[in-house]
Image 1 (cartoon, rainbow, N blue to C red):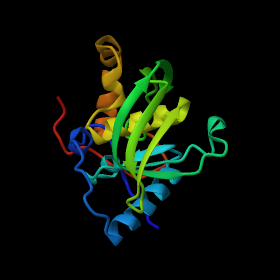
Image 2: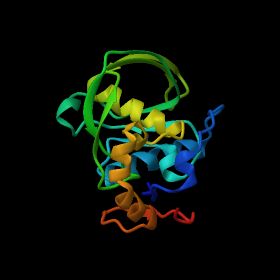
Image 3: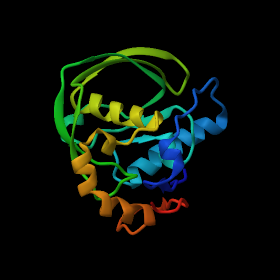
Length: 185
């Protein structure tokens, strides 16, 4: 398996809507293994394909090491469609593509989604709590939305200098990254 570099804030891939997967190829299955390896080596609990520069609707989840993830096996979600959202709760979130920044984000407490697994089998499942939050965070990535977009404009202004540093690659992290080639605003 290969550890892939994580694309940092400022890369266009993070703001691009991923394309639906119509067929899985052997390369895709290896890519999914590499996504799991990358997520694990980066101490993440969710990773969307956009975050490693691939614009396909694929995400991986592994909350098994988290206190709320006991008994939850790592899994793959392909082409997710949120069918229902219920309740809401606020929790602090972070993101491998926006290292060092954490903020409270309001999300649904319970979701029902339709998706395909790595064998291309269709599932209709309901998730709640942390698992629902992580799935929604990663689905946002597939739709070109970053968690900071859920923050107030005041909070985003407060984070502006930190975001500029991330965009420049001026971050201290223990995983490889791709820094934005776009000019700073």
